[in-house]
Structures are given as structure tokens and as C-alpha cells.
Length: 232
Image (cartoon, rainbow, N blue to C red; front, side, top):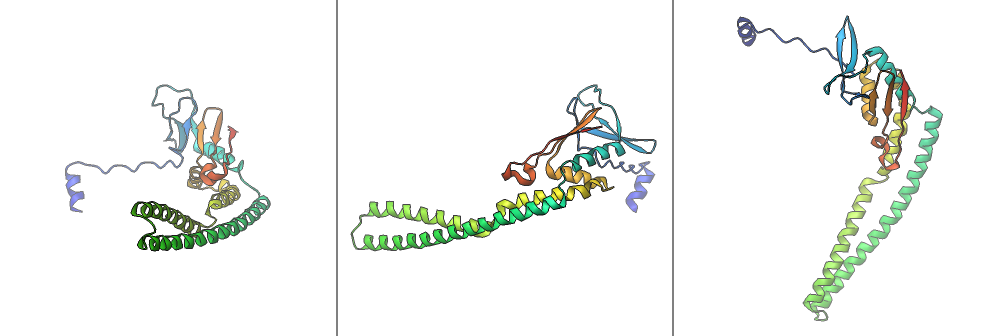
């Protein structure tokens, strides 16, 4: 309170709170590449090119209209529940097959690990008994130790990671099914979050909204991608 009293005596007025614009910083101008910014006029939020690189012909759009374009962009990549259920069932089959193959591989590598240790033990015995000279012993030991380390690392990765390589695909299918609900949301923060999630490269011009939805952000390993153009 004392600080506030001092500021008031000095004539400092508290800074007004900035008007929140939930869609600002999300979209770039199709014409010049600048970020789309926003301002409030007569009680409504309007979005337009920031024009940081000079004059730009892109027109202004009201927040409600811009939000509807974003909703349409999301609807274009939504997956019906029936499709999602079938896709998830198929992925589950892949996961089970992969887990079985991984278990077989891990068992094989563990057996080889034991063999490597036995070779190291025999190698040491041969060196102690004078069968191998120092240089030959050192060369073989390095070879066996390196192979043992490779096997141990591989086993650890499989046992800790499981079938995680398919998880991005599961997440992509789940998010695509959820997209329809997100598109119907009145919370503009949900629209923003969804486009950030899928890595959308949103471009706006006076006539269209272009969205290159990069699904690599959700299922990068599968190389999945979508693109769409929404007419304003």
C-alpha cells in the first residue's frame, strides 16, 4: 500500500490491462507473411495483418468470423467415432504383434549377453594360463566388452520403451476423433490449443484461410499429414 501511495503522489497511474485476443499470434498473413494481430473497435475484436513489412492488402476480419474458419479447419480433419474405433483396434493388434516380436528379440539378446560374459570369463582364464599374450587378450576383451554394452543398451531400451513408437499414432487418432467436439467449443482458447497441437501452419488472406495441418507433430513416425483450404 505504501508503494501505491508513493506512486499516486508522483502522478503515476496504473497501466490499463491489455485486451486479451485469444487468436492473436496464431496466424500469418498470406500476402506478406507477417503475423495477424488484433484490436478492439466498438466492443468487437478485429484481426488484421500487422503490416510490419509495409502496406498490405489483406482486409480485417471479425473474431467471430475468424473463429468459424478455424472451426471449419478442425472439422475437416475430424474422424467419426466408428472409424476411430476401427483404427484403434487395428493399432492395438499392431502393438500386440510388436510386443511379441520385442519379447522374442529381448530374450535372444539376453542369451547373447550371457554368452558374452562366458567368453570374457574364458578369455581371462586363457590369459592367466598364458595361452594368450597381453595384446591379443586386450583386443578380444575390447571386442567382447563393446558387444556386451551394445546388447545391454538395446535390452534396456526395449524393456523401458515397450511399444511406445505407436503411441503418437494412437494420440493422433484420439485427437482427430475429439476434433469435432473441439470445433463446437465456444472457448476460443480450445481452437488455438488444437491448432498448436497439430502444428498447423495457418495463413489468412482476404478470401481464404489456408491450413497446412502437420500431423507429424502427432504421428511423425507414420509420416501422416493433411492440408486444407477453407473459403471465407
